Image (tube, rainbow, N blue to C red):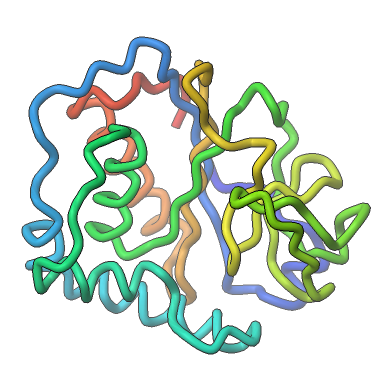
Length: 210
């Protein structure tokens, strides 16, 4: 489903949208191997375009480099990027980002609740959050963020927070796919549905709602 956006985000970044879905991971039993990342990037013209569009958003936010997905596609296409093979969910996340060209975030649903919104740091009760690396990051008020109520649980530019990270105890996750500018709601919804289905096919999760 399309994630709710705050008024401040709509006014500042009207083209930025995200699709959110939930999945059960308790009985996750990967079946077979994911396609190679080089294979995933081989016919990634549309994915590359989405990644480049998101890189332009990153630059407007003050980033010096590109969106991580654009770099991942480039490295995968040359065979310079491979799976960690230590965590099936993390490997699937990498595969899905390269295959689609969109940023995707996973969060432990038990730490969030049902009220998740896409907004700006100015919508939060504080503009700083603990990154998944455990570093404290202070954001500019105009930066797009993922919110659980009024708490920042992820930044478009910097990534997810520590508190909602997936662990070995995670039973259910919220997955968020950030659409690149120019992606219609229907196109983003179709991409998210494809990722949902692929996760089931590979035994990464069972879908609760998409």
